[in-house]
Length: 140
View (cartoon, rainbow, N blue to C red):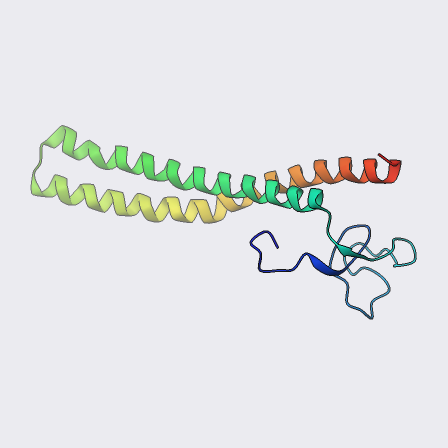
């Protein structure tokens, strides 16, 4: 939805805004019935903004882990060149170390970065959703 590939119009749960099929009378995500919370046809802009903020934080963590690993890799790979002048083995070790750190940082970003970013993004979503739900249910 954030990228414009999913519509922001249709039939959604009135409580959690999960998509609802026309024949569904209760939300498959939160379990609330359509009688309890009437289905809506559009997702509020504030809810879309919540998702955007959460996804932004997730991506920031992944990119930070990846670029941090590459930076450490460049520094470590330059050590043979600094301490042993530009001999063929020092140049070869530079590229080998750089390639190794590239693989390591990509794997760390895809595992550790994803996990940390997802948790951080979900905590942001949870806090913003709690505020949104309290304001909505409290009438403002």
